Image (cartoon, rainbow, N blue to C red):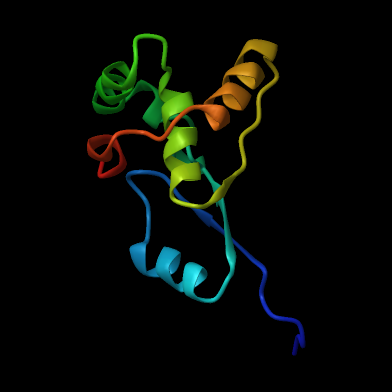
Length: 111
């Protein structure tokens, strides 16, 4: 049995798979949520990137906003840390830039 309190909980977390109860529990107990699969479930890799609904949301946020950038911002605005990876320098720069952008509008956050 561990004697140290839980500091991080890793869970799949994106607009189609988020658990309000888990997020609330983590916040209440000062546990950091570490999100994986934020572009879609590992079982359906990158499914959200090509989903028309999320493409329309990203376009509504801004002309130059990509779906992965919008999804990263969505995760971060929920107070979670995100696991993102890329082998493309442009994608890495986009992920970094997305983490520095202003908050997403409420309609996007409710998606």
